[in-house]
Image (cartoon, one colour):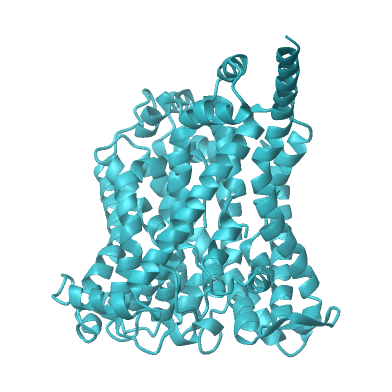
Length: 306
Length: 313
């Protein structure tokens, strides 16, 4: 399935040259003013608004059904966190949030590995190899970006049913094993980062095409692979529409499907629901805290939105 | 000698195959996956939209021509369709316009030289790492009628509590807040990247001409950002047209129909409800094609506006 992955207007999508990071830090002379107190105040408030719902998830997940909806609302964590986590870990979505977590990890990892590997191959071919129909095929790749996910969910549902993949994790992995965004992203990167002389040298040494990919292209593409990998993982982990259709009523859900089950079920024990939301959010937030700088760089290089 | 010559010839032929064939091998996975799970479904949706297909017997379909479309426009479910179309537009405007304006302002502030700018950027982008499901559930709690954080804050200012989920406008505002929360930081970073590519001498010249910071923002930054702004408008509009997870989960029990009175049912939710709860896959396919048609129209309008802008420059 084509997810709505999009690009910036292509001419400015460039490689992260060494100087780019300093440019991002904003230390170019001559035009930048220092921030005044108002700027700090506004940014501080917006940062607070951005982070508060995440903190509130933790607070709500650590209270109980009554305390969480009482007035005034609790503002500091209570003592029920582990009790609630334990409950959703074992009971949410049929087999518990633990299973869902494992399933999401499996799906997002497979999709990420596939997308990165196939994008490097295709991106390399489009960036550096000459072949008949290259321009037309690349136009086709970019054109597929415009196809919305909604358009294909009904036939995908039927297709997966006929493939015997109804309610199967494979139904979530197969359609996104490679994305147009990934191919485009890699191509843009490799056009600039991969010196043609290096490829010629490898050819002179008699290296086969695949050897060249492994020993020359992959090492150079590694930073872009890392960024693409993280963006793909985030997107796959957070994907909602297709999993909710493909895994509807499944006793073997992903995190998002299990969360949807918690949210639309009969019980409205908000502290338990928030415990589920916490489990679903924490892994990505950890990735984000560890690699946030690279994700920020990846977004400014080629935008992605799911 | 002969064998080595033969081996040489074999090698060079192998080499030629390698250079000629391998590009196609490298791009094949993309096109195979796209053909199977992108192009084929796309065409199949069109075919399905002209049929009656049940969710429980997906391989049996009855030809009904354009009935699914005419039903949506003027038949029995047309009330739901026009309502969902209207909601998609209002929710789209409510979530896109404030989001992009705020992102522009924030990018401008982030572009200042300041301490802790890395922290601000990461904090602003943190919602991006949150899923629709987790974000919507947290906000559903915040906007909950009993003991919700939003009503508590309103109460501090002496305002009466609001039943956010029940009203058309209040529920749509609440849903827009979720969308805005998740995407403002993301758009701000895109604007920031574009701002930092603006040549510094443009600002210097403006400053020499006595332009204030605000004037510089209006007359230097904004024009330079025009392509980026257009890009984010297109992306956000596409996203808004397909809005599904937020309204679906915001409503809890009644989310699948966009609220008890369908007051925030979008086209995406309607498609899900018709196809996967009412078992009418043909009608769901027709809704999908209408959404696609809307996107094409929006794309054409955008292209037209972009050309106008370029000409006026």
